[in-house]
Amino acid sequence: MAWCENHAVDYVLGWRATRGCDARSPVRCAKAKREQQRTGNAARVFREFFYRTRSSWSRSRRVVAKASILAKGENPASW
Image (cartoon, rainbow, N blue to C red; front, side):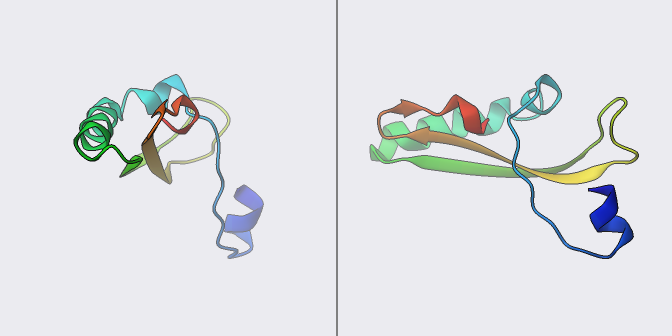
């Protein structure tokens, strides 16, 4: 990330949710569950916030979190 930022390269990375990020998304998770139950289809809800790790990131970065509930149930890897 730092290399991209230092060289003006835009980037998008995906990673599994961490406890720090999970704590910011419970409302979105509940909203996705309600939408999936209402429609019977997969539901995805997004939230944007700034986040910084305690030690490995040099600064705060923009994060877009996705809560997704598939038609067959929860998709915990996307929280």
